[in-house]
Length: 195
Image (cartoon, rainbow, N blue to C red; front, side):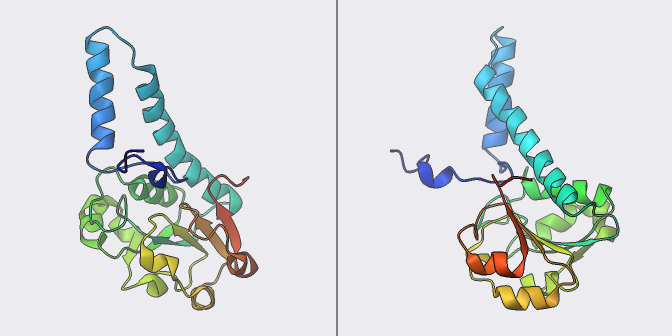
């Protein structure tokens, strides 16, 4: 019933990030080990979070039959909406995993662009930072929605599709999971959906 941990925070996603929870779970696990006690639930959460990020990369690559020489538009970089905080953001691992598999990235985030540029500096030659979500989608083979910013909830899906050369849409926050239009326009994949 506590509003800070209520069901509104328990949604499908590509993994958790931020400055607190990842650090706190690692610290709790370490305290347990130092005290001779296994923290099985906490350690399972840490492993599951890492696995979820890896699963998202695999989901994209497998459904696109590889991403080598393909352009992926990433929408949302910060670990949650309404912040520029990218500490342990799932977008970092997902972008790096896609680049390692040969993809080129076009990305936009309402607040995370500046922080992303230094956190992803080692991948700079493979990333284009767009002026908005429609610029990010230009000639893209796929859209990957990572952070559920309100402005992404109101995307003009027809305009987005017109900009693209492909038709894949990976909704890692299930923002459009009830939309019929998105399934008509795109080869749509949500979290929890097979593949």
